[in-house]
Length: 258
Image 1 (cartoon, one colour):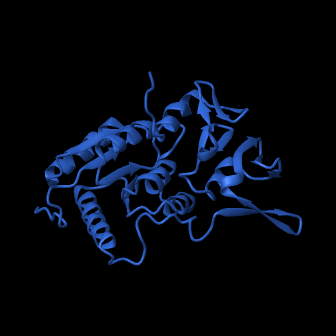
Image 2 (tube, helix red, strand yellow; image 1 turned 90 degrees about the vertical axis):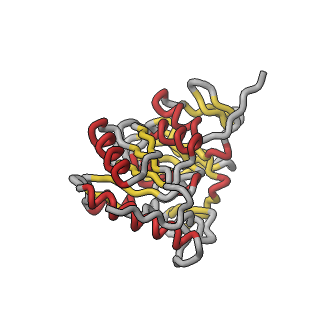
Image 3 (cartoon, helix red, strand yellow; image 1 turned 120 degrees about the vertical axis):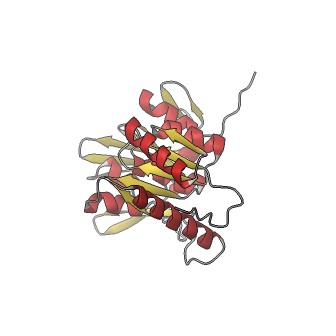
């Protein structure tokens, strides 16, 4: 099988995000056969973000159902919004709900399990070709287009017959309580809505709003400090879950002070 290099001067670096060691190693072996030898494996969202920041891969193969508090689709949203790196989903879930969630993160395709060597090769080659075509202006949409950024900087909350505008920059945090969520705004307003935390975060820009606890999502720009137990927003403290801490801080630009 000959390798098409898609106008790369060197073979692209590919990151595999997969928490099943056998599948990850199988994919890595396949990529080596195709000639993609510069590959890396991550088994969680936190590891993947660190690998992206360190090695800046050209493409990510991303399992939809990785272990941890952020699944592959949530990670896909972060990759698309913050790093603009193309990715392909690997999934054994092709139901309507999963596909509907996934498509809004703008993947370049899906590899459905169980997959063959030819399935993987074809998906990667087409994705790399489309990446190059879009980057050169041959596509209608930019790969880093934010689906929430079409001249839209706010959401509207319906209260009876009134739609009230809430700008993203004014939305501080969202708190879940059972089947309801409460949206907190910087002018003291709050709105309680019968929705899940996942339903509301799917409507928000994933580079600006991140989950820090099973019951809390915060606006990143409003965060003033972070300790091991809380996210600080001025005088306010929002709890940060231990399992969310590493994934959250990995998305931040940090430096060490003496």
